[in-house]
Each structure stands twice: as structure tokens, then as C-alpha cells.
Image 1 (spheres, rainbow, N blue to C red):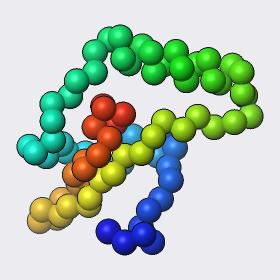
Image 2 (image 1 turned 90 degrees about the vertical axis):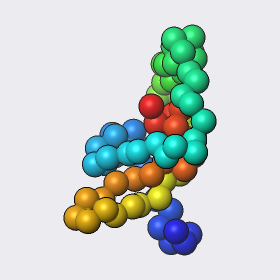
Image 3 (image 1 turned 135 degrees about the vertical axis):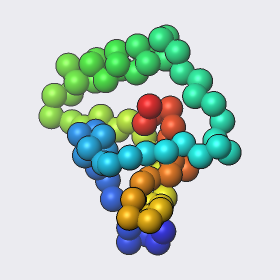
Image 4 (image 1 turned 120 degrees about the horizontal axis):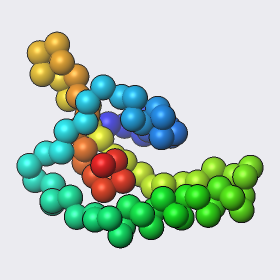
Length: 83
């Protein structure tokens, strides 16, 4: 993927994409209740203090794959954030 294909998206756009797959070479998902509750608290705290600012959740790097007529996104980095 070249730099011209890099696009910032919001959460709604990210989650409305068709299909994401985690390749076998990725490490296992490791977040538990503590981690995702902390993330939600951080987002809520930020939103209450800076109503006019956007919260940067981090990056998700994907590679578009095609299998026949199906297209999906292979997650290269950002599995924890995406999940």
C-alpha cells in the first residue's frame, strides 16, 4: 500500500467496513475487562473536558485482500483497538 492510500477514519467509518480478519501470525488478543473499561473511561473523561476536540484512539493498519469476489481487510496492526 502506498502513502496515497492512507486515510484517517472515525470509529463509525472503521466499524462499517465489510470484514476484518486477524491473520494467524498475529499474537493473541490480550485485553480484558480492566483494559477496555480503562479505554472507555479515558474516552469519556476526554470528551467531558474537551467537547470540541477529537479523541485519537491510535492506528489500525490493514491490507486489502481479495479472494474471488470477496474483499476483506487483513489486520496488520491494531488488533486490540479494533476488537
